[in-house]
Image 1 (cartoon, rainbow, N blue to C red):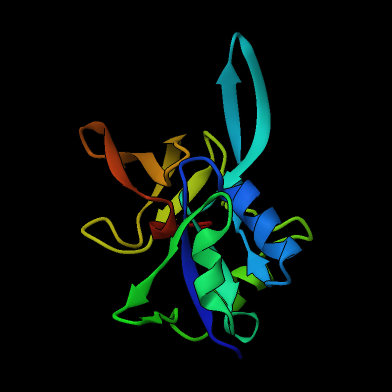
Image 2: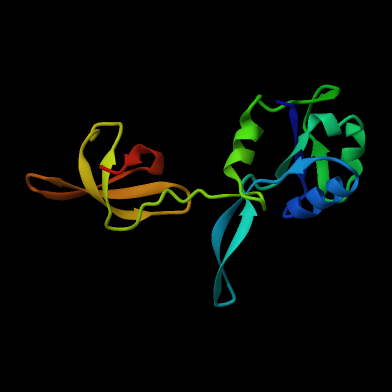
Length: 163
């Protein structure tokens, strides 16, 4: 495992910064996710940065890290005093393993509206309900059956499993 640094980019210039850093010989990783984009009455699925405003730079290619700050699209490399701050070991490697060849990470949990789901933690742990809604930020609404009727419960997608 090698060390990775975080580079802050100018707003909406992550791809430009990654391209320009790569052209200078730096090894960069810009993790992205798929998102439904609605614009001018058109809807399409596109790739957007997983961490807007940031990308990762491998340490072995950062011998001349001061030149990163002068790259078009880059604000600055995150530093602690005089030297760049390294990301926790294994974090970027785990992201790379989950990404496809274009750097897109699939965050789709595989649940659909109406699916039976089991809550893993909390006061309703080990109870089964029906998924009502799941938003792009990972928040879920589950309809739980009780003696008197149905009650919606709000949780996160990582608190759900297939029964």
